[in-house]
Amino acid sequence: MTLKKKPGIIRRVFGGVWGLVTWLRRAVLNIIFIVIIAAVFFALKDSEQPSVPDGAVVAISPTGVLVEQRSYNDTLFALFNQDETNAEVVLSDIIDAVNLAEEDDNVSMIVMQLDNLRGMGMTHAFEISQAISDFQQSGKKVLFRSNNFSQSTYLLASFADEVYLHPMGGVELKGLAVYRSYFKALLDKLYIDFHVFRVGTYKSALEPMMRNDMSEADRASNSVWLSSLWQQYTTTIEANRALKPGQLNEYINNSHILMQQFNGDSAKLAQQMHLIDDIKSRAEYTDYISTLIEGDIEDHLIDFRDYIALSEALNMAAPVADKIALINAEGNIVNGHEPYGAIGGDSLSELIEQAAQDDSVKALVLRINSGGGSAFASEVIREQILRFKATDKKLVISMGPVTASGGYWISADADEIWAMPTTLTGSIGIFAALPNIERGLRHIGISNDGVATTDIAAGYRPDRALDDKTQAMIQSQIENGYERFLTIVAEGRGMSVEQVEVVAEGRVWSGQDAYERGLVDQLGSTQDAIASAAKLAGVEAYEVELISPILSAKQQFMLELSGASAAIMPMSLQAQTISLLQMLGLEPLQGQSALWFNSRDPKGFYAQCTECMAP
Image 1 (cartoon, helix red, strand yellow):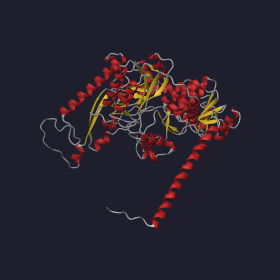
Image 2 (tube, rainbow, N blue to C red):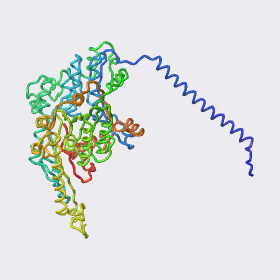
Image 3 (spheres, one colour):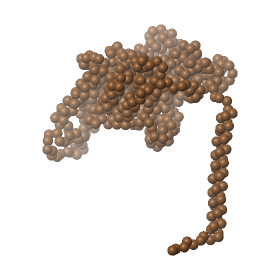
Image 4 (cartoon, rainbow, N blue to C red):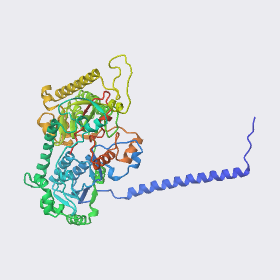
């Protein structure tokens, strides 16, 4: 047996002292922790119940990029991208704040300034305006101020009771346009060819690789929806601001002459044209608001986000048994799973299945903002929608600014389709494109040769010309995909294939035009779609439950920390990239959350509307 040597007296003394110090450290920390908890408890106990101040002024002045659903990015980018200008502002937060204020007797008015909000187009402006109009019906005012009005922010401002502009600002109205960069000449110089497969006269997604200018078919299609949207824009503002019909176009087309008459003072010109009510500096505007309330403005002003949180805390209503589920689907349609920022075929299907399995959910509203993407992923989602409908629950589609191509593919079988008049939809078509660099390699002295057991064994290689048999097979499959698309729309919309063909061939329609052609059932916002879903389900009292992907604790932490990111490409980074390309005189190939090249379609077949850039 081995005996352990007993530690010396010095070691034992120091060990005892160290143990005592460790015990004291833990004891002190525990005492401090208990004191903090007690202090917080008594502070909360003795504090007054928070409340919305009487005569509150709800300030809606967000900074960041407007989105319909916050995105998630599990990268270090989220940790370091803390620039407030790249934060994400959720559309529903703005609408919810206005709706809550409408019913709140403590709220006296809303003041809005959207100079630091990016990404708001016509459709979003119209959706917010609906809430503003309801708010005004309660007899309360909405004031709108800007340092310099953009085209989209001015549309929303026109709904306000009073519109104010900074002395150095203006109202920048230009109209709508579609211009694209074409690369055929460049590709020829680089000896790069594209094998293009498509069906649809108006399916112009690949024209930049095929031509050096816009085709007449694409020009005609774009002209129709641009004119439709611009007419809605001008007539709305002229009605809101009591202007003469055609006055807005006259102002824009003669702005160079009018600006000279006012010595370049765009603020005075806007006032003279009755586009605004008055010109006020920041201090003058603040002083003016002070005259409309009693007391110090700082005691009445409350940020819309704080107002939502406070209102929800003070109005904890008892839960309602019946629910209308709401799922937001925004971004490029891709194959597989995507948490946020894109529409994953599998991940969205799982959310729809979750709504189907929940007995408390009586109907589902699927909000879609997408120009499409993978044809395969679109079909996966559509199949899940059919399974949902098999449960006898109602499904209603609410179209966002863009719900086209693959977005329409997954919408066609809904019980109802709602769109805003300015929604871009349709684009019923399908395509594939395979780049080939054989000529370029040969030009620099690289050749390709080999042997194969069959005529098509080489398959697709970018360094070999695609053989005729493979091209014929791909084109046949594309045509089959198009026929499938037509049949899906025909069966879902209760139309004949011949009727669908008339509005298909890749043609893009405004929501108003789509409604007139039977592609859309009703015109209205997400709130209208929710109310309709409840009516279809025979439900009067209900809660709206947002169904979102379940995130891990780590993912949720990253989402809350970043506030701005996307699975394929962070929307804020995308906005910066687009801005940089525009500064260089270039345009991105398309403006959805990812290029169709990233849609991961198993066959490389895409139902994508790359020209659907919602104004």
